[in-house]
Length: 363
Image (cartoon, rainbow, N blue to C red; front, side):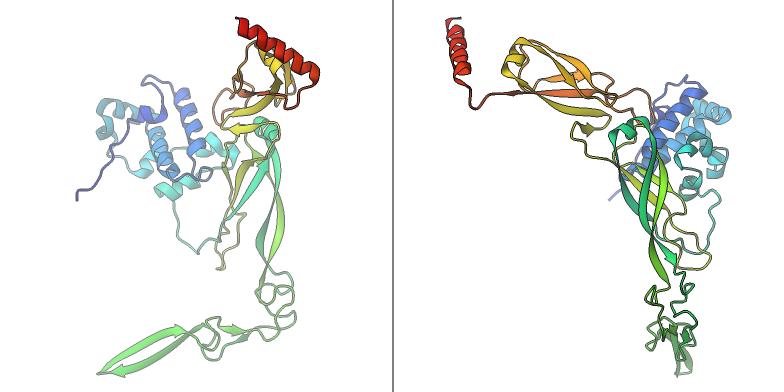
């Protein structure tokens, strides 16, 4: 079976700009798309590949010399550049550092200055339910989460204060039992988990009461995060170094990922940057028309209900939704009209409806 290959898209198409776009337009397009597809914020399966594609297009088109080579020779004109040549000059902190995103993404994806070292701690992911007004304007939100910390009582040893763990005599504290034998002149060495200490390398005769001998405890922390205006549903904000600590001394802690969710609002339902609301009106108002007072994120406003409005008709209030994330303009507020039919009309109402029916029958 032959391998499936995917053709690269034209860099201008990737950023959605014309070929004569100036540097400012290219930068704005990259910033908008990078904020949308940054894998630390967008957890869609395709986010990583889209971000790589966007970053590569910007790396070429933002550099006058590389852009000239690309315009003249297409992909062949820039095929000789290494990853360091392409991405070495990008200052991503200047582009979207205000959102807590920086150059580490390029190190992970493109190998810029990646360094080997002790394993990182585990990341923490939490959800923050943010009111629609704050999503519309942007602002600070306090989040709370549990994070592993070294037990202050025992200093991480797991042993009761004033005592110390006892080294396993069977493995000399290594946690590994090594045995050897000679077969047909060949010495064979085997290593396995120490059966006496179960690989821990030590015994704690008097465990610390504060951490039950684990050496660490979960503590609740609070942190103020910045919610960008128009934050998309499910947007992930990455806060470096606020995850769990590394299990190895000298290892970097993990990161905290705050997943932005819209707090349920009885007034609206969110759909991207648009808001939806049901407005209940009487039969008379639907037939004759009326003026409604409806809530918006900026306060109540008056809306004209046209005569002859049909059930489930939709009225559109332009620009009364949420800001488009990373872009310009706002979404809209849609009103879905629900016409109520009286279930138990009064005698007077019944006479009027019967008269109306008779009038309609004569037409």
